[in-house]
Amino acid sequence: MTTQNTQILRLGVAYVCALITMLGLALPGFLDSSEGVLNGADFFGTWDPTMMIMMPAIWGIGIPLFWWAQKRGKPVLDTVCHNPKKSSLDKNLFFGAAIFGVGWGISGFCPGQALSALAKPNVELYVMFGGMIVGIYARYAVERIQSRAEVPTGQAAANPAA
Amino acid sequence: MQVLDFSPGTAVVGGLMTGFGLSMLYIMNGRIGGTQGVMSGVLTPTNRSEVPWRVAWILGMITAGVINALWIHPGPIFVAASVPMMFLAGFFMGFGARTANGCTSGHGLVGVSRLSKRSIVATMTFMCTTILTVFVTRHIIGG
Image (tube, rainbow over all chains, first blue to last red; front, side, top):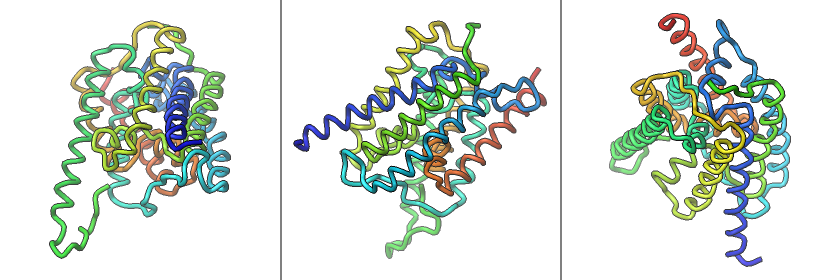
């Protein structure tokens, strides 16, 4: 197979995999209502078990398949897997995740839910999505500032940005 | 409000689909389908050759939303929070996810499936603050 054909196949695979992934989220209603997530987190009120069942279902199939992927070593259509570079826990991980959770607990729509839900025009959702883009760029600005604060000898800053 | 299908049954079927889709992206393409990573890779790209697959992934996500809108759950979305709160929520999620290098899908679904220590910690952390936030908004502030 030519490299061009492989690239076309990879794009097709990405498209289809995203479709399957988000159709899975669509089925229970996670693209249509904040209540799936908010009730899923409302242990002291109107708790709904859907989210707490869905996540283990995802892990249940994901853990063996990712284990198998690692055992294979290389992806089917590419030469190497692109894995995250960091392995140690750091401040950014904690604070970033903590802040993220507050946003999710307010909206009930995570970035993935929101992106797919754009198919249904809704003012609140579109505003949230805009806020997300602003937030990403704001963090990008912080990263740029932090990397410019590196010691001129080239020594990396103590806490390199994400 | 439209009737939705939150139930153990759809949770399992949907969960298997979502897990399968994310796993296959990794097995076939060697890429992680975390929404923050995908978006950041398009909005602030560091490698232009990594943009096309991300665009394809995003188009697939939107297609799923269109299929949902046409055939699975036609009808309006229900959003619990106001416009200004939703902007804040979005900002927190965008900023926080990028700071943590991952969101619910990147850390919570893919990262945990890879048994990544960072992702397990990130997921536990954001689950806690999500639960806490819902508690505060529903049982302390809200009515």
